Image (cartoon, rainbow, N blue to C red; front, side, top):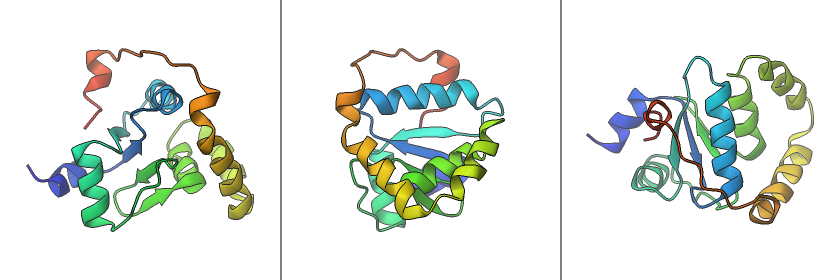
Length: 137
């Protein structure tokens, strides 16, 4: 099965830094709140992540950016967080409010957190359940 076929089948994909404890914690947080099980996950440095991003979007994914593919477009930085938030019950209202903040301010805050993410989080070994693992590509 090609990378393109996988992506089109599972069309809402969060690409994250698989080596980052904060990113893994955020993925766990998303899994708990995604009650409709709409989101799928792939590390940026996985074969799927690198081949999809390079081949179909011609993007060099910065190591400090989460990426979100919504089935049509690839979103980066604060826009990715907002688009993901729009899919979550209750958090969709917060995402709408945050969207009113100018993008340069949102991305500035996002970049500051992203650059320091490895210092802001503890190293943890999160073990996902079989039900959760099905959502990883």
